[in-house]
Image (tube, rainbow, N blue to C red; front, side, top):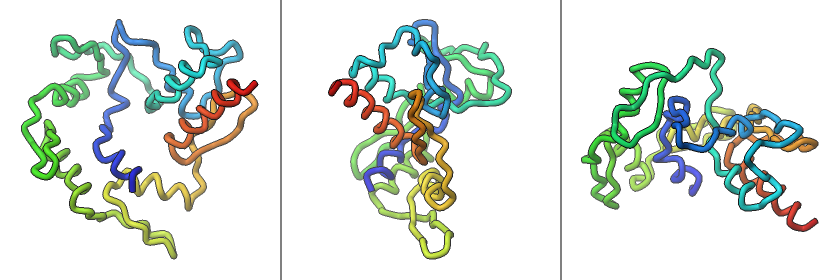
Length: 190
């Protein structure tokens, strides 16, 4: 499905990234269940549909209990990302490497061979991850998509609308983002 293909190339290093000195502030915590402060977010006018749409495009940052300070800078010229430790920084450095692993099917290139292998599932249609809930058996190309799907069965809805008075919850961040845009449409129609 489209959703599966969309997530094929999604990097799972979101929690290792940090805002550089010249980057906009990170308000993605509001995309993971935290309500907006009563006065709104400084510097963002969520009544402006354009700014609200930009807010909805934010990727949620994984919240960690022991959020250690990010003091290690990426040494790559022009990169402003900071990391908690050397291991995270070295993992990130791969993203700057040459994309030498090329898909013969569509020409898309990757830094790591494992990412190319994962991408090729788009072309092969292989779906090795199967839902084990009784009577389901739905299959997925990626374990990430299976984990998201399982929330349908468990009822887990970790993505909460950040708008005051709106208590809608969603199993997938993409559904929360689509929902947030309905607030923009509602404001436009007032």
